[in-house]
Image 1 (cartoon, rainbow, N blue to C red):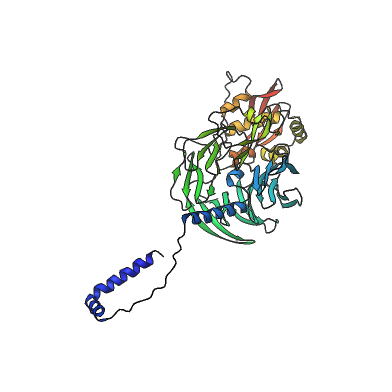
Image 2 (tube, rainbow, N blue to C red):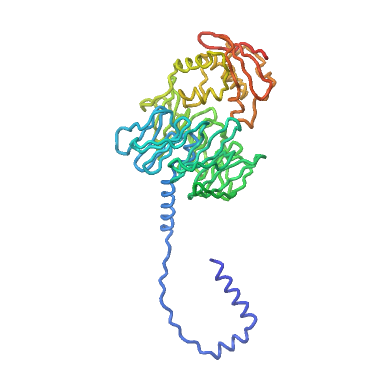
Length: 503
Protein backbone atom coordinates (compact mmCIF):
# COMPACT_ATOMS: atom_id res chain seq x y z
CA UNK A 1 0.00 0.00 0.00
CA UNK A 2 2.87 2.40 0.68
CA UNK A 3 3.97 2.24 -2.96
CA UNK A 4 0.70 3.61 -4.39
CA UNK A 5 1.24 7.39 -3.73
CA UNK A 6 4.78 7.15 -5.05
CA UNK A 7 3.65 5.59 -8.34
CA UNK A 8 0.87 8.16 -8.85
CA UNK A 9 3.23 11.07 -8.21
CA UNK A 10 5.73 9.69 -10.69
CA UNK A 11 3.02 9.34 -13.33
CA UNK A 12 1.83 12.93 -12.86
CA UNK A 13 5.37 14.24 -13.15
CA UNK A 14 5.84 12.30 -16.39
CA UNK A 15 2.65 13.75 -17.90
CA UNK A 16 3.62 17.21 -16.76
CA UNK A 17 7.00 16.92 -18.46
CA UNK A 18 5.41 15.90 -21.76
CA UNK A 19 2.90 18.78 -21.92
CA UNK A 20 4.19 21.53 -19.65
CA UNK A 21 3.24 24.42 -21.96
CA UNK A 22 -0.32 23.22 -22.45
CA UNK A 23 -0.72 22.75 -18.74
CA UNK A 24 0.52 26.28 -17.99
CA UNK A 25 -2.02 27.88 -20.43
CA UNK A 26 -4.90 25.92 -18.92
CA UNK A 27 -3.93 27.01 -15.47
CA UNK A 28 -3.75 30.69 -16.49
CA UNK A 29 -7.17 30.77 -18.21
CA UNK A 30 -9.18 28.56 -15.87
CA UNK A 31 -10.68 29.96 -12.72
CA UNK A 32 -10.20 27.46 -9.96
CA UNK A 33 -13.34 26.92 -7.84
CA UNK A 34 -13.03 26.91 -4.11
CA UNK A 35 -13.43 23.41 -2.78
CA UNK A 36 -14.99 22.73 0.53
CA UNK A 37 -13.12 19.93 2.15
CA UNK A 38 -14.93 18.15 4.90
CA UNK A 39 -12.93 17.70 8.02
CA UNK A 40 -11.59 14.20 8.42
CA UNK A 41 -10.70 12.81 11.79
CA UNK A 42 -7.34 11.12 11.69
CA UNK A 43 -7.16 8.23 14.09
CA UNK A 44 -3.61 7.48 15.11
CA UNK A 45 -2.89 3.88 16.05
CA UNK A 46 -0.85 3.99 19.18
CA UNK A 47 2.07 1.60 19.59
CA UNK A 48 0.65 0.53 22.93
CA UNK A 49 -2.58 -0.53 21.18
CA UNK A 50 -0.66 -2.67 18.69
CA UNK A 51 1.44 -4.20 21.44
CA UNK A 52 -1.71 -4.92 23.44
CA UNK A 53 -3.33 -6.73 20.50
CA UNK A 54 -0.17 -8.74 19.91
CA UNK A 55 -0.01 -9.59 23.60
CA UNK A 56 -3.64 -10.74 23.60
CA UNK A 57 -2.92 -12.96 20.59
CA UNK A 58 0.05 -14.54 22.37
CA UNK A 59 -2.04 -15.18 25.48
CA UNK A 60 -4.86 -16.72 23.44
CA UNK A 61 -2.40 -18.89 21.52
CA UNK A 62 -0.81 -20.07 24.77
CA UNK A 63 -4.22 -21.01 26.22
CA UNK A 64 -4.89 -23.28 23.24
CA UNK A 65 -1.49 -24.96 23.43
CA UNK A 66 -1.32 -27.81 25.91
CA UNK A 67 2.35 -27.38 26.81
CA UNK A 68 5.61 -26.03 25.47
CA UNK A 69 7.75 -28.11 23.15
CA UNK A 70 10.71 -27.58 25.49
CA UNK A 71 8.82 -29.15 28.38
CA UNK A 72 7.63 -32.08 26.26
CA UNK A 73 11.11 -32.79 24.90
CA UNK A 74 12.20 -33.10 28.52
CA UNK A 75 9.46 -35.53 29.54
CA UNK A 76 6.45 -33.25 29.97
CA UNK A 77 6.02 -33.97 33.68
CA UNK A 78 4.07 -30.74 34.36
CA UNK A 79 1.50 -28.57 32.56
CA UNK A 80 -0.88 -25.77 33.50
CA UNK A 81 -4.24 -24.37 32.42
CA UNK A 82 -6.27 -21.71 34.18
CA UNK A 83 -6.09 -22.16 37.94
CA UNK A 84 -4.70 -25.70 37.77
CA UNK A 85 -1.19 -27.10 37.60
CA UNK A 86 -0.80 -30.79 36.79
CA UNK A 87 2.32 -32.80 37.50
CA UNK A 88 3.51 -36.41 37.65
CA UNK A 89 5.94 -38.18 39.98
CA UNK A 90 5.81 -41.34 37.82
CA UNK A 91 3.55 -43.04 40.30
CA UNK A 92 0.63 -40.59 40.40
CA UNK A 93 -0.85 -37.71 38.41
CA UNK A 94 -1.64 -34.69 40.57
CA UNK A 95 -3.94 -31.72 40.07
CA UNK A 96 -3.15 -28.65 42.19
CA UNK A 97 -5.52 -25.68 42.20
CA UNK A 98 -4.15 -22.25 43.04
CA UNK A 99 -4.90 -21.29 46.62
CA UNK A 100 -5.38 -24.86 47.81
CA UNK A 101 -2.86 -26.32 50.22
CA UNK A 102 -2.73 -29.88 48.93
CA UNK A 103 -2.81 -31.36 45.43
CA UNK A 104 -5.35 -33.97 44.44
CA UNK A 105 -4.43 -37.34 42.96
CA UNK A 106 -6.44 -37.86 39.77
CA UNK A 107 -4.74 -40.95 38.31
CA UNK A 108 -2.09 -43.55 39.09
CA UNK A 109 0.66 -45.06 36.96
CA UNK A 110 3.71 -44.08 34.94
CA UNK A 111 2.48 -40.81 33.43
CA UNK A 112 4.32 -38.38 31.12
CA UNK A 113 3.73 -35.91 28.26
CA UNK A 114 1.19 -33.80 30.13
CA UNK A 115 -0.90 -31.28 28.18
CA UNK A 116 -3.59 -29.04 29.69
CA UNK A 117 -6.24 -27.17 27.68
CA UNK A 118 -9.34 -25.72 29.30
CA UNK A 119 -10.40 -27.94 32.19
CA UNK A 120 -8.96 -31.09 30.58
CA UNK A 121 -5.55 -32.66 31.10
CA UNK A 122 -4.17 -35.02 28.43
CA UNK A 123 -1.36 -37.46 29.15
CA UNK A 124 0.43 -40.65 28.21
CA UNK A 125 0.12 -43.62 30.54
CA UNK A 126 2.51 -46.36 29.50
CA UNK A 127 1.80 -46.64 25.75
CA UNK A 128 -1.72 -45.18 25.84
CA UNK A 129 -3.16 -41.66 25.60
CA UNK A 130 -5.75 -40.54 28.17
CA UNK A 131 -7.63 -37.43 29.15
CA UNK A 132 -9.26 -36.43 32.43
CA UNK A 133 -11.05 -33.53 34.03
CA UNK A 134 -9.14 -31.53 36.63
CA UNK A 135 -11.04 -33.30 39.41
CA UNK A 136 -10.15 -36.76 38.07
CA UNK A 137 -13.59 -37.45 36.67
CA UNK A 138 -14.67 -38.36 33.11
CA UNK A 139 -11.44 -40.22 32.34
CA UNK A 140 -11.32 -41.45 28.78
CA UNK A 141 -8.87 -43.68 26.90
CA UNK A 142 -8.22 -41.90 23.59
CA UNK A 143 -5.56 -44.05 21.94
CA UNK A 144 -4.43 -47.60 22.67
CA UNK A 145 -0.79 -47.91 21.62
CA UNK A 146 1.09 -51.05 20.70
CA UNK A 147 4.47 -49.40 20.08
CA UNK A 148 6.56 -46.74 21.76
CA UNK A 149 4.76 -43.42 22.02
CA UNK A 150 6.91 -40.35 21.59
CA UNK A 151 6.27 -36.68 22.13
CA UNK A 152 2.63 -35.51 22.29
CA UNK A 153 1.27 -31.98 21.85
CA UNK A 154 -2.33 -30.76 22.16
CA UNK A 155 -3.60 -27.64 20.39
CA UNK A 156 -7.24 -26.64 20.90
CA UNK A 157 -9.16 -29.75 19.78
CA UNK A 158 -6.28 -31.59 18.05
CA UNK A 159 -3.72 -34.01 19.50
CA UNK A 160 -0.48 -34.59 17.59
CA UNK A 161 1.78 -37.46 18.67
CA UNK A 162 4.65 -39.58 17.42
CA UNK A 163 4.98 -43.37 17.42
CA UNK A 164 8.43 -44.97 17.23
CA UNK A 165 8.83 -48.05 15.05
CA UNK A 166 11.43 -50.52 16.33
CA UNK A 167 11.44 -52.09 12.86
CA UNK A 168 12.04 -48.91 10.84
CA UNK A 169 13.91 -46.98 13.57
CA UNK A 170 12.03 -43.74 13.01
CA UNK A 171 9.04 -41.77 14.25
CA UNK A 172 5.70 -41.47 12.46
CA UNK A 173 3.57 -38.39 13.19
CA UNK A 174 -0.16 -38.87 13.83
CA UNK A 175 -2.99 -36.47 14.62
CA UNK A 176 -6.48 -37.02 16.04
CA UNK A 177 -9.12 -34.92 17.70
CA UNK A 178 -9.39 -34.63 21.48
CA UNK A 179 -12.18 -37.22 21.54
CA UNK A 180 -9.82 -39.82 20.10
CA UNK A 181 -11.49 -39.80 16.68
CA UNK A 182 -10.07 -39.39 13.16
CA UNK A 183 -6.63 -40.86 13.91
CA UNK A 184 -4.65 -39.78 10.85
CA UNK A 185 -1.09 -40.57 9.79
CA UNK A 186 0.68 -37.38 8.71
CA UNK A 187 4.29 -38.24 7.85
CA UNK A 188 7.18 -40.62 8.48
CA UNK A 189 10.69 -39.79 9.72
CA UNK A 190 9.47 -36.81 11.75
CA UNK A 191 12.04 -35.36 14.14
CA UNK A 192 10.13 -32.53 15.75
CA UNK A 193 6.87 -30.60 15.45
CA UNK A 194 4.83 -27.77 16.94
CA UNK A 195 1.69 -25.69 16.44
CA UNK A 196 1.63 -22.01 15.52
CA UNK A 197 -1.47 -19.95 14.72
CA UNK A 198 -3.54 -23.10 14.41
CA UNK A 199 -1.25 -24.77 11.89
CA UNK A 200 0.99 -27.77 12.41
CA UNK A 201 4.69 -27.41 11.57
CA UNK A 202 6.90 -30.49 11.52
CA UNK A 203 10.47 -31.39 10.58
CA UNK A 204 10.94 -34.36 8.29
CA UNK A 205 13.95 -36.03 6.71
CA UNK A 206 15.00 -36.31 3.11
CA UNK A 207 16.59 -39.73 2.37
CA UNK A 208 19.88 -37.89 1.87
CA UNK A 209 19.53 -36.30 5.31
CA UNK A 210 18.37 -32.89 4.15
CA UNK A 211 15.61 -31.65 6.42
CA UNK A 212 12.70 -29.40 5.67
CA UNK A 213 9.87 -27.90 7.68
CA UNK A 214 6.39 -28.74 6.46
CA UNK A 215 3.26 -26.76 7.31
CA UNK A 216 -0.12 -28.49 7.58
CA UNK A 217 -3.60 -27.01 7.75
CA UNK A 218 -5.87 -29.46 9.56
CA UNK A 219 -9.58 -30.07 9.20
CA UNK A 220 -9.71 -33.65 10.39
CA UNK A 221 -9.86 -36.12 8.88
CA UNK A 222 -8.72 -33.92 5.96
CA UNK A 223 -5.53 -31.86 5.84
CA UNK A 224 -3.36 -29.93 3.39
CA UNK A 225 0.42 -29.66 3.51
CA UNK A 226 3.00 -27.41 1.92
CA UNK A 227 6.76 -27.17 2.15
CA UNK A 228 7.51 -24.24 4.44
CA UNK A 229 11.30 -24.04 4.74
CA UNK A 230 14.26 -26.05 3.45
CA UNK A 231 16.95 -26.67 6.06
CA UNK A 232 20.55 -27.76 5.55
CA UNK A 233 21.01 -29.07 9.10
CA UNK A 234 19.40 -31.12 11.84
CA UNK A 235 16.39 -29.66 13.67
CA UNK A 236 15.99 -32.50 16.15
CA UNK A 237 15.61 -29.98 18.99
CA UNK A 238 13.51 -27.38 17.14
CA UNK A 239 11.38 -25.07 19.28
CA UNK A 240 9.31 -22.43 17.50
CA UNK A 241 8.52 -19.47 19.76
CA UNK A 242 6.78 -16.41 18.31
CA UNK A 243 8.79 -15.55 15.17
CA UNK A 244 11.97 -17.42 16.15
CA UNK A 245 13.20 -20.99 15.77
CA UNK A 246 15.63 -22.31 18.41
CA UNK A 247 17.73 -25.43 17.78
CA UNK A 248 21.12 -27.09 18.27
CA UNK A 249 23.68 -27.11 15.50
CA UNK A 250 27.37 -28.06 15.79
CA UNK A 251 27.03 -28.35 19.57
CA UNK A 252 25.77 -24.77 19.84
CA UNK A 253 22.36 -23.44 20.80
CA UNK A 254 21.29 -21.29 17.85
CA UNK A 255 18.30 -19.29 16.64
CA UNK A 256 16.96 -18.03 13.33
CA UNK A 257 13.86 -16.28 12.07
CA UNK A 258 10.94 -18.24 10.62
CA UNK A 259 12.11 -17.51 7.09
CA UNK A 260 15.46 -19.18 7.78
CA UNK A 261 17.49 -15.98 8.04
CA UNK A 262 19.11 -14.09 10.90
CA UNK A 263 20.94 -17.12 12.25
CA UNK A 264 22.64 -16.47 15.60
CA UNK A 265 24.93 -18.50 17.83
CA UNK A 266 23.52 -17.96 21.32
CA UNK A 267 26.31 -19.82 23.12
CA UNK A 268 29.58 -18.70 21.48
CA UNK A 269 31.62 -19.74 24.51
CA UNK A 270 29.64 -22.85 25.40
CA UNK A 271 29.17 -26.23 23.76
CA UNK A 272 26.13 -28.36 24.48
CA UNK A 273 25.76 -31.98 23.43
CA UNK A 274 22.46 -32.63 21.64
CA UNK A 275 22.44 -36.11 23.16
CA UNK A 276 22.90 -34.76 26.68
CA UNK A 277 20.54 -35.78 29.45
CA UNK A 278 18.27 -32.83 28.81
CA UNK A 279 17.69 -30.87 25.63
CA UNK A 280 17.26 -27.08 25.73
CA UNK A 281 13.99 -25.74 27.07
CA UNK A 282 12.86 -22.29 25.91
CA UNK A 283 10.76 -20.78 28.71
CA UNK A 284 9.89 -17.09 28.80
CA UNK A 285 12.97 -14.93 28.37
CA UNK A 286 15.43 -17.75 28.99
CA UNK A 287 16.73 -21.01 27.53
CA UNK A 288 17.44 -23.69 30.12
CA UNK A 289 19.80 -26.61 29.51
CA UNK A 290 22.22 -28.99 31.19
CA UNK A 291 25.50 -30.11 29.73
CA UNK A 292 26.19 -33.71 28.83
CA UNK A 293 27.53 -35.52 31.90
CA UNK A 294 27.00 -32.49 34.16
CA UNK A 295 23.26 -32.37 34.98
CA UNK A 296 23.42 -28.96 36.66
CA UNK A 297 20.81 -26.70 35.13
CA UNK A 298 22.01 -23.53 33.37
CA UNK A 299 20.18 -20.74 31.62
CA UNK A 300 20.92 -18.04 29.05
CA UNK A 301 18.73 -15.22 27.69
CA UNK A 302 16.89 -16.08 24.46
CA UNK A 303 19.02 -13.39 22.82
CA UNK A 304 22.21 -15.21 23.84
CA UNK A 305 24.84 -14.63 26.48
CA UNK A 306 26.98 -16.21 29.14
CA UNK A 307 25.39 -19.25 30.83
CA UNK A 308 24.38 -18.81 34.46
CA UNK A 309 24.09 -21.67 36.94
CA UNK A 310 20.70 -22.10 38.57
CA UNK A 311 22.10 -24.09 41.47
CA UNK A 312 19.67 -26.91 40.70
CA UNK A 313 20.59 -30.39 39.51
CA UNK A 314 18.34 -32.30 37.10
CA UNK A 315 19.09 -36.00 36.71
CA UNK A 316 15.98 -36.73 34.69
CA UNK A 317 12.88 -35.17 33.22
CA UNK A 318 11.92 -31.59 34.06
CA UNK A 319 9.27 -29.00 33.16
CA UNK A 320 9.03 -25.25 33.72
CA UNK A 321 5.65 -23.73 34.59
CA UNK A 322 5.88 -19.97 35.10
CA UNK A 323 8.69 -19.52 37.61
CA UNK A 324 8.39 -23.05 38.99
CA UNK A 325 10.71 -25.89 38.03
CA UNK A 326 9.39 -29.44 38.36
CA UNK A 327 12.34 -31.80 38.10
CA UNK A 328 13.78 -35.16 39.07
CA UNK A 329 17.12 -35.74 40.70
CA UNK A 330 18.82 -38.88 41.97
CA UNK A 331 19.67 -38.91 45.67
CA UNK A 332 20.13 -41.65 48.26
CA UNK A 333 19.28 -44.37 45.76
CA UNK A 334 16.03 -42.78 44.58
CA UNK A 335 14.70 -40.44 41.94
CA UNK A 336 13.00 -37.56 43.73
CA UNK A 337 10.53 -35.06 42.32
CA UNK A 338 11.37 -31.55 43.45
CA UNK A 339 9.65 -28.20 42.95
CA UNK A 340 11.96 -25.18 42.89
CA UNK A 341 11.55 -21.46 42.25
CA UNK A 342 13.52 -19.93 39.40
CA UNK A 343 13.14 -16.27 40.42
CA UNK A 344 16.44 -15.98 42.22
CA UNK A 345 19.06 -17.88 40.26
CA UNK A 346 21.96 -19.01 42.40
CA UNK A 347 25.43 -17.84 41.50
CA UNK A 348 27.02 -20.89 43.11
CA UNK A 349 26.00 -24.53 42.94
CA UNK A 350 24.08 -25.66 45.98
CA UNK A 351 23.87 -29.19 47.26
CA UNK A 352 20.91 -30.74 45.57
CA UNK A 353 20.14 -32.70 48.73
CA UNK A 354 19.04 -29.38 50.25
CA UNK A 355 16.98 -28.46 47.19
CA UNK A 356 15.01 -31.69 47.38
CA UNK A 357 15.09 -32.44 51.10
CA UNK A 358 11.43 -31.72 51.90
CA UNK A 359 9.58 -31.98 48.60
CA UNK A 360 7.66 -35.10 49.52
CA UNK A 361 9.02 -36.73 46.37
CA UNK A 362 8.92 -40.39 45.58
CA UNK A 363 11.26 -42.44 43.49
CA UNK A 364 13.06 -45.69 42.88
CA UNK A 365 14.47 -47.56 45.83
CA UNK A 366 18.04 -48.74 45.57
CA UNK A 367 16.73 -52.22 46.40
CA UNK A 368 15.90 -53.74 42.99
CA UNK A 369 14.39 -56.93 44.42
CA UNK A 370 11.26 -56.71 42.28
CA UNK A 371 13.28 -56.02 39.13
CA UNK A 372 15.61 -58.98 39.76
CA UNK A 373 12.65 -61.27 40.39
CA UNK A 374 11.25 -60.15 37.04
CA UNK A 375 14.57 -60.94 35.34
CA UNK A 376 14.64 -64.41 36.92
CA UNK A 377 11.11 -65.15 35.71
CA UNK A 378 11.68 -63.84 32.17
CA UNK A 379 14.85 -65.86 31.57
CA UNK A 380 13.95 -68.96 33.61
CA UNK A 381 13.00 -71.01 30.56
CA UNK A 382 16.19 -70.32 28.62
CA UNK A 383 14.48 -68.00 26.17
CA UNK A 384 16.16 -64.98 24.59
CA UNK A 385 14.82 -61.42 24.31
CA UNK A 386 16.02 -58.19 22.75
CA UNK A 387 16.93 -55.30 25.02
CA UNK A 388 14.23 -53.25 23.31
CA UNK A 389 11.51 -55.76 24.19
CA UNK A 390 12.92 -56.13 27.69
CA UNK A 391 12.57 -52.39 28.26
CA UNK A 392 9.21 -51.85 26.58
CA UNK A 393 7.35 -54.92 27.82
CA UNK A 394 8.82 -55.43 31.28
CA UNK A 395 11.24 -52.89 32.79
CA UNK A 396 9.09 -49.86 31.91
CA UNK A 397 6.29 -51.27 34.05
CA UNK A 398 8.48 -50.75 37.11
CA UNK A 399 10.68 -47.83 36.08
CA UNK A 400 9.62 -44.99 33.83
CA UNK A 401 12.95 -43.19 33.91
CA UNK A 402 15.89 -44.13 31.71
CA UNK A 403 17.51 -47.55 31.54
CA UNK A 404 18.31 -49.32 34.81
CA UNK A 405 21.81 -50.85 34.85
CA UNK A 406 21.99 -52.93 38.04
CA UNK A 407 25.32 -54.71 38.31
CA UNK A 408 23.97 -56.91 41.11
CA UNK A 409 22.22 -59.08 38.50
CA UNK A 410 23.72 -60.90 35.52
CA UNK A 411 21.25 -59.21 33.15
CA UNK A 412 22.20 -55.75 34.42
CA UNK A 413 25.91 -56.50 34.06
CA UNK A 414 25.38 -57.72 30.48
CA UNK A 415 23.46 -54.52 29.67
CA UNK A 416 26.30 -52.44 31.14
CA UNK A 417 28.80 -54.29 28.95
CA UNK A 418 26.76 -53.83 25.76
CA UNK A 419 26.06 -50.18 26.50
CA UNK A 420 29.74 -49.38 27.08
CA UNK A 421 30.69 -51.26 23.90
CA UNK A 422 27.99 -49.53 21.84
CA UNK A 423 29.06 -46.05 22.87
CA UNK A 424 32.78 -46.86 23.26
CA UNK A 425 32.63 -45.66 26.84
CA UNK A 426 35.75 -47.17 28.41
CA UNK A 427 35.30 -45.22 31.64
CA UNK A 428 31.87 -46.77 32.14
CA UNK A 429 33.24 -50.18 31.14
CA UNK A 430 35.89 -49.93 33.84
CA UNK A 431 33.16 -50.27 36.47
CA UNK A 432 32.72 -53.86 35.23
CA UNK A 433 36.37 -54.70 35.87
CA UNK A 434 37.40 -56.05 39.29
CA UNK A 435 40.73 -54.25 38.99
CA UNK A 436 40.46 -51.42 36.43
CA UNK A 437 44.05 -50.33 37.02
CA UNK A 438 45.57 -53.61 35.85
CA UNK A 439 42.90 -55.21 33.64
CA UNK A 440 43.64 -54.52 29.98
CA UNK A 441 41.10 -56.47 27.97
CA UNK A 442 40.74 -56.23 24.18
CA UNK A 443 37.36 -54.63 24.77
CA UNK A 444 36.86 -53.23 21.28
CA UNK A 445 38.01 -56.29 19.31
CA UNK A 446 34.64 -57.24 17.83
CA UNK A 447 33.78 -57.68 14.18
CA UNK A 448 30.79 -55.43 14.39
CA UNK A 449 30.11 -51.76 13.80
CA UNK A 450 28.76 -50.75 17.20
CA UNK A 451 28.39 -47.04 16.51
CA UNK A 452 25.65 -47.25 13.87
CA UNK A 453 24.65 -43.61 13.56
CA UNK A 454 21.54 -44.45 11.54
CA UNK A 455 20.07 -46.63 14.27
CA UNK A 456 18.18 -45.56 17.37
CA UNK A 457 20.54 -45.65 20.39
CA UNK A 458 23.14 -46.81 17.86
CA UNK A 459 21.61 -50.29 17.81
CA UNK A 460 21.80 -50.93 21.56
CA UNK A 461 18.18 -52.12 21.79
CA UNK A 462 18.69 -54.63 18.96
CA UNK A 463 20.96 -56.88 21.01
CA UNK A 464 19.32 -60.16 21.99
CA UNK A 465 20.41 -61.80 25.24
CA UNK A 466 19.88 -65.18 26.91
CA UNK A 467 21.13 -66.41 30.29
CA UNK A 468 23.33 -69.38 29.40
CA UNK A 469 24.43 -70.20 32.95
CA UNK A 470 24.74 -68.64 36.38
CA UNK A 471 27.72 -66.61 35.16
CA UNK A 472 27.38 -66.37 31.36
CA UNK A 473 25.15 -64.56 28.87
CA UNK A 474 24.69 -65.36 25.18
CA UNK A 475 24.47 -62.28 22.95
CA UNK A 476 23.35 -62.18 19.31
CA UNK A 477 21.78 -59.98 16.66
CA UNK A 478 19.47 -60.55 13.71
CA UNK A 479 21.40 -58.29 11.33
CA UNK A 480 24.54 -60.40 10.95
CA UNK A 481 26.80 -63.17 12.20
CA UNK A 482 27.27 -61.59 15.60
CA UNK A 483 27.20 -64.23 18.32
CA UNK A 484 29.32 -64.49 21.42
CA UNK A 485 29.09 -65.43 25.09
CA UNK A 486 30.01 -63.10 27.94
CA UNK A 487 31.44 -64.58 31.13
CA UNK A 488 31.22 -62.78 34.46
CA UNK A 489 32.58 -63.33 37.95
CA UNK A 490 30.47 -62.55 41.03
CA UNK A 491 32.36 -60.62 43.71
CA UNK A 492 30.66 -59.28 46.84
CA UNK A 493 27.19 -59.36 45.30
CA UNK A 494 28.14 -57.74 41.97
CA UNK A 495 29.00 -59.23 38.58
CA UNK A 496 32.29 -58.27 36.94
CA UNK A 497 33.35 -58.99 33.37
CA UNK A 498 35.80 -61.90 33.03
CA UNK A 499 36.10 -62.79 29.32
CA UNK A 500 34.12 -63.52 26.16
CA UNK A 501 34.01 -66.31 23.56
CA UNK A 502 32.77 -65.87 20.00
CA UNK A 503 30.30 -68.49 18.84
